Length: 75
Image (cartoon, rainbow, N blue to C red):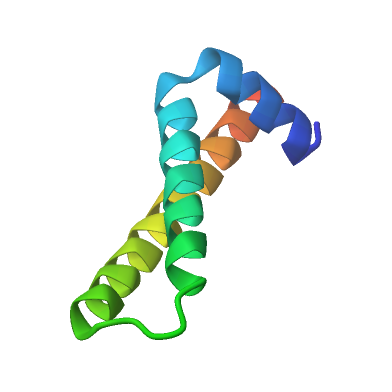
């Protein structure tokens, strides 16, 4: 089963995955808006780094959920 298909299934069946994906998308949009600015203040730079780390954590957890689902299907 391909990852895209698993992601579609998880969006429907796994609340944690769905929430992580929504938060990841929200952070992505916020970061896009932030990057449109010519300059960022020091506080904005710190906030940007925090959001980037959080976004990566969400992505890592989503990948882990996909792997776990894939293992369950193969078992």
